[in-house]
Amino acid sequence: MKSAAVPVLSACAFLIVSFPALAAQGTRSCGAGAIRAAAAKQVAPRLVGCRYDDVAVPLAQYFAIYPSLTKTPGDDASSTILQQTPAAGEPLAAGGQLALQVSVGPARSPQAAETPAAPPSTDTPSTEAPMTETPVIETPVADAQADLPPPVQKAPVKDAAPAVSAEAPTSEPKAAEAPRNTRPKFAWPKLSMPKLDVPKFHLPEITLPKLTFPGYLLRPDLAWAWIGTALVGVLLFFVWRGRRPRSEITYDRVPQVSARFVFGPSRLSASGPLVMESGGHT
Amino acid sequence: MTLTTETSAAGAIWFDDLIDAETRAEIEKEVIEAANRDRVLRDLILTTPILRSAILRAVTAALHFDPLALLADGWCTAKDIRAACREGGKTGAPIVLKLSSHSIERDIHPAIKVTIGFEKSFDLDVGLGLAGTFDGITLTIRDSKLESVGAGTCGLALLVRVAGRPVISRDITTLDLPAEYRFAQPLALR
Image 1 (cartoon, rainbow over the protein chains, first blue to last red):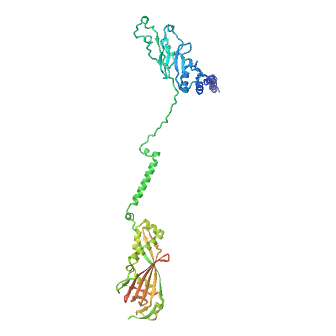
Image 2 (image 1 turned 180 degrees about the horizontal axis):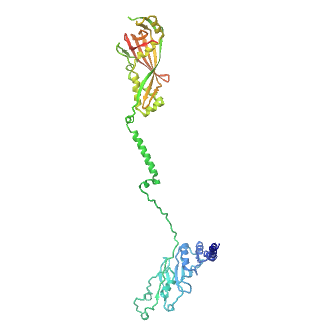
Image 3 (image 1 turned 180 degrees about the vertical axis):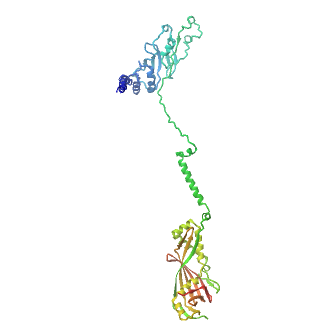
């Protein structure tokens, strides 16, 4: 009894704990259900406060759009949508334009505030609108890359080239005076395309059994061919038999025929007395 | 059509020599039709076509008979002739009887016996009637046996019957009988 009660109780506890989350998944504004409902009404869903990673796929699925991103540092967690255009509830048709301002997280280095912001570089994950990126100064490169949202791709920027490349020669005296190891680096967030739920079509695999030579001839689809061949053979046989010379047919069975006449009674009729004269031989 | 045929004393008279090709073809036609009316014989002919010509050859061979000997059965069974023989006859002495004009008719039914692995006889449903009209003939009888017929004329006619109905009636010939036409063997009076 104890061993049976443990899994039952565990299942009940799991359901109690996970039910509110499961129930809220379909109704919260960041979920796919809300985006689908908004797509049905052709209005923009409420995305502010949602993580871009959570809404990217439903947006592409139900609205068939890639939103144009504007990434800015902020106090919110990384990849949090700060602002959206059009606003929630405004008309947004499938394939329309949706601009999102996404947070890349708080600026961790105080030097980043002193460093003038480089002009935003453009990267075009979508043909509809260019994405404007805000450079972020990072001190530990690994941490900054870990906080960045995944759909960011590193790209060279002309204006920020002196600050990006530590090895590149520079003509400015400030940059030359700064030690190379402490020179801030710009790490551009990597862009990655949101994953789409593309339905996969599974074609049935046709596996033909390996048949040997006699087995190949005994395939069911060749049954009619065999029947037709047999009929043609029978037909040719009878044609051959019919064209044989008749004498050849009866050559081995020559009949013997004899005819005989069965004579009936004779009928003699005379108009008068039959014997006219009787006498001896002369 | 009446043909007149001279017969010698030594020469024999055969029926197949007396009939012409047209009469022979009609006889063969009636025989084959009678054979086809027999279901078993018809199937045999269909499966063995050579049987047809074999039947015709057999019938033609069977037509080789003496018509006078065939018709003499009418004299042998006539009461008048038998009575005349009893009246004036010594034993061993020939008796000559002069007969008035009369006619004798006799039916012939052909039968076919076929042997193809087995033997089976078929009575064809056709009748040949041979009729002879005699005028001025004399009969020679010895010991109650008819030995010869002489002088006079004999008109022969052929009558073909199918199912009892005559379908062909043809005069074959008229024979001028010799003074003495001896039969191959004496015919006993009955």
